[in-house]
Length: 481
Image 1 (tube, one colour):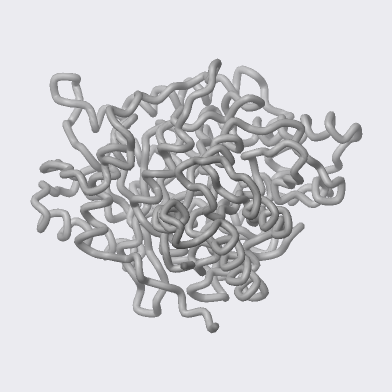
Image 2 (cartoon, helix red, strand yellow):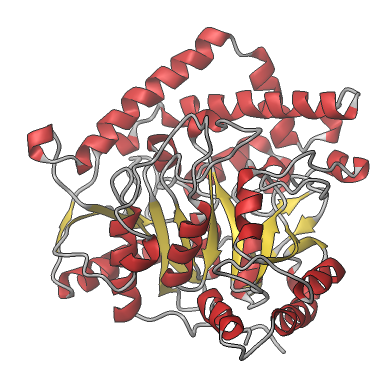
């Protein structure tokens, strides 16, 4: 049953072919088998999960299906959540209230098995925290899983659970999905509420979702979690019908732009990543779509990193300040990883006018990028989808991104690795990573498909079409039994 996706597992429970307890026991057995080598989980709740599975579960669409939550956000009242941070682990910090998303998962009938690893505060793109150590890629244990949802992606990749919660502020759903051979959709801004305690973070760049092995799981979970909460600062356009109904639907003949190389002129293209996009372009043409080399010129703006980085620094400073209030003490820089100590320092030193300058710059940037998807009548270029690599390289080695604590080198490497993703956190557009390419030595390479604001429906139709044309569902990492 561990080879079944979440929709199939839910159907087994509905039809009486399997019980929630059987699904949970099998998931726990598989996790215990692979965790010593991968280290995707930082905390389990196996006994509570077994008890819940044998009791009365909500009669939701995923009743009895096992799920893992990222150890960042998605709160459940009274449950330990440590954000990858040692000082929160040592204080045994616990969420005071349920988040709207946490309730959505439990109302859907999911059985929660534990929390997955994340880098401290989710501020980098590899899952190697000082508090919990490195999470290793099931396809090659010497490689990164990506971040910040790397623990979730690793656990789904080795088959521990069919779906896991993930969050994305600069690529943190799509990057782990790419490095672990999964489907990873970043929803439109405002599609998934972060209430009641968070209105926006990273200037509205962060959004929650999941990582899965199939497009239909991604669509069905999006239906579950995309329920607005009164007072949300952003709202996404309401879908015309459930997202699950888009799976298998005809996407029509689309106008597609390809960007196979970094839009920043000083960054080099990786051959595998370039080949992945070019092959996707040929596949799209064979399916009847119009494909050309084209992309929004603004994506390569040299000022982007500076302005986006300011919003992250301000939020890190605020987050640490809020935890200081919760814990009733000051948190020394030495208790933070150097990256986050630097972000905190930036946030503390920043003038309000500098922060607002960056917000204003990013607002103009967003309009210029989004115009590429608008119709000519609206002053745009009339494209439906942009196709890029997810990352600048295949999965890098463990310790490479962190550069052994050298912040300057680490920043350069992060910039080279993620030339394609954070721009669409800022614009708020939906984007999905699909596992369409594998390197000669067996490493997954994801391809990113970006739609117009609110057009998850179109991305899901296209992703489903590609899943049928180039199936990936049965691909598994070569971990020993």
